[in-house]
Image (cartoon, rainbow, N blue to C red; front, side):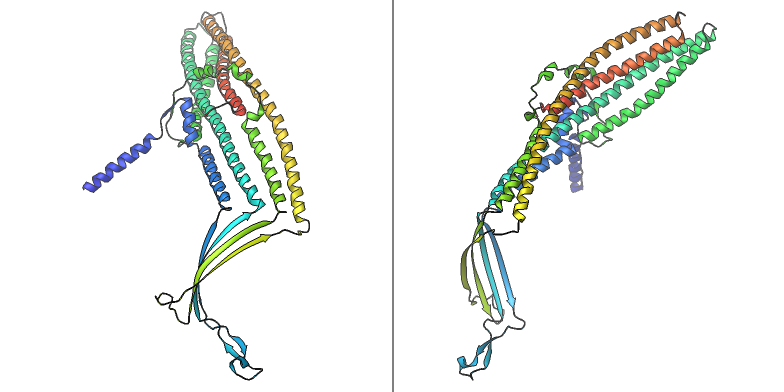
Length: 447
């Protein structure tokens, strides 16, 4: 009973620890930090860097001393016979005597130390392992930037859906009130039936829009969870406000940031590709050079007609050998030359790709700055338009109930207001996401 109690307590505390690992509320910065640790792409990028570090160690180790051991046991089922001239043993000339030069059974145990003295490909391999590690680290940086941008987009989509839902509910509440009042006026014979029908059409459209937004909100939360690396059905709460985030993300200083493409991660990745091609060319050229290796081995051997190798009186014979070997490439029928030429061509292609990357990055930066500046301007314009649309709708509502404006005029003003509301919310979302896009291209985010 005591052991069962201890087990249950352990399970409870263990489950409590794991349940606390996933927070339920997130600011935008908290969401970004959590995703950089738990997003599946981000975690795999960390693993790639770790694998590259191990690859570098493996490559380095190939040029260090290597020790191998071997134990051999041999038992002749039918021993091999050698023939000796019979006259050696006093026999007749021209005849032969069968003899056995070794016992039936033998055991040998040897250890060999191999050391690479010189190999051009090994030197290039060390350089390549270092570059491969840099490529993995740059890839992780790019992945982190993309994850950050994806989190901002997902976070913004959730806030956008929430705000749209709130506004749609508020609009429906106001419209239902207008419809009830208009219906009563119509029933008293002081309004036309068309006025009621116009409001009903508007209300039906809003209710359909509300249903659509409700589904989008659910999908937005699921997408947000997936981006963070959380189960898509896990309940999460976003604590930041769309308008507050928008104001925080208006940064005119970002528009004047230096457009040095060499600071961007995409340029660094393209530069890595060029350097990789240079190393491949070096590798092909190194195939013209000789390679030099040395080895030394030592061991013991035992022989007998019976298996006596585990006894104390077994005789063991020691031996050792030192050797150096040099491999010299002489003639390959043009194979090495063709491989070297291919590597030169690949290097020229990489250089052209780097130049193209520079041009593309300059254009992308200019385009992203333009989009971000336009998003800020749109936000300011849509804010003004929303205020105007609210005033126009309010005036037309007053005129409608005073009998001055028609139901068509009111519906037109309401539709204009709903459109202005959606455009205003979208403009806030665009400010946040366009800034994130520009930061991703410029690589101006510090982790």
